[in-house]
Amino acid sequence: MSNMPAIMNPKLISSSLHQYIDRETASVQSEQLYGDRVVNYLYSAVREKAPTLFKALTSSSISYLVGLWNYDVTFGPASSGVSSFCRKLGINLSECVDSLATFDSPRKVFERKIRYWERRPMDSAASILVSPADSKVLLGSLQTSSQLFLKGKFFDVYELLGQEKALWHQTFQDGDFAIFRLTPDEYHYNHSPVSGVVVDYYEVDGTYHSCNPGPIISVVTPYSKNKRVVTVIDTDVPGGTQAGLVTMIEIVALMIGAIDQCYSEHFYDNPQKMEKGLFVKKGQPKSLYRPGSSTNVLLLQRGRVDFCQDLRLNQRRRDAISRYSLGFGRPAVETAVKVRSTIGQALPSMRDMETHVS
Image (cartoon, rainbow, N blue to C red; front, side, top):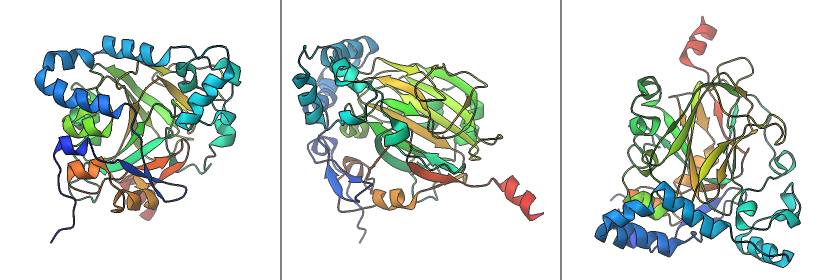
């Protein structure tokens, strides 16, 4: 008899625990999902009984207004307010660049800069790929033969990349991917996961669905329906990671007002907009989510990246209750990772291997 998890009704999933693996300790942690009851109500009763209202609530204008209401109320002159707020969310203010006095609203806390060069160490090996964010990661593959096969669960790759991007459809249609889910309390700068040259950059319009695990289960391919920014990076260049073409897709969610592109080669200095021809260095700040929950997706060419074994093994653990596992009927447990931490290693292309052999 199969020991795979049974697929559960989405309404039951929304009331279940959601757990993940802490990478540093390998322990199971229960997540207190931000606004869980409200979000689940929105995606059950409101979506079913008032679809017009649901559509309005997941629009850009309402998402912006809700974000203002949640994030722009001032703490007041005393530092005790911000300290209590950060303590409740588990935010470590000691790693921040700016002083406590500058954080007079939740927005400024969520958009904080950290001393990543000290507090988020990175393997300097050229072939290493790193996490683009403090987040919870799931690995996947679009190959039916892969143990990580999860096609059609989180996104439709053609829709995700934009319907007019035939070249990228062909490039990534049988590739691998990694999904990084950020929660409101986490550091909201994205960093480049690889080194290479930007060969394409564009935006795709869409809605503002929540990235809470409950709605991800209930909405078919939600990530390819939300507004998103797509950056395609060629890493097979001098000084690059040598992992082929890597696409980083930054996806908005409920209460995310914008994604600011602000690449900095050194600390957070002299931020630059993304554009074709720009060389980005692995581990450097690339963009900022203006706050809320949000998601990054990395698309990788088939056979060009070997994901870390601990991430693979964690994903199949059965001692953690994951809403994704319950919804998909197969183990899908996230691992909490830090920005700039190793997620995999580049593999040579078939052409490179043939050249080496000959």
